[in-house]
Amino acid sequence: MLYPFLQEMTNKPIAMSMIASVAVAAILTLSVLAVISSSNQAFAQAKPTSLTLGAFPNKGTVGSAGTLRVSLSGKLTSEGSEVGGATIHISGTGEGKQFTVTTNEFGSYSTFVDLASGTHDIQAYFPGDATHTSSSATKTIPVTP
Image (cartoon, rainbow, N blue to C red):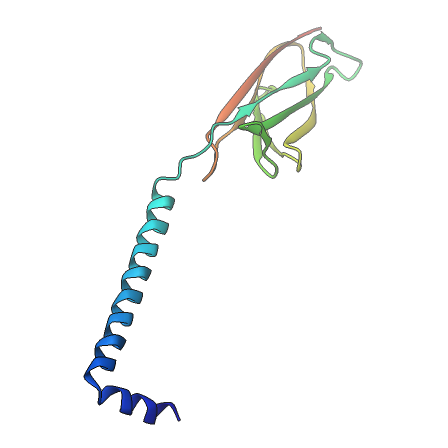
C-alpha cells in the first residue's frame, strides 16, 4: 500500500523535492542535536566536594586492651548536597593500616578504630569520581599510655 504511494510521489518533481528537503532538514537537526549532546558531556566539570572528619573521644588513655577505641565519623557534601555511596579511605590509624568506608544516602560515614599509644594523624580521603572532585580531612588524636 505504501509502495504505490511512493511510486506516484516520485513521479512528481515537486513532491520529490519536498521529500528531499524534509530528509535533509531531519539529518541536519539530528546532527546539531548530536553535537550539542557531546559538547555538554565534554565540558561537564566535576563538582567540588567537602569532607569532614570527627573523632570521639578526640584524646585519651589506652585501656586494658592496650588501645583506645575511637569512633570516627564525617560527611561528604558537594555544593550543599550529600554525596551517598562514595568510598572514603581512612589512614593513619597505626601500623600502616588503611581501610575504606562507604557514605550512606545522607553522605555520612562512621567507623571505629583501636589506637595504640602515640599521636595519630587520622586522614579521611575521598579520591573523587566522574562527577565530584577529591577532598580530605585530617584529625590528630593523642593517645597516652
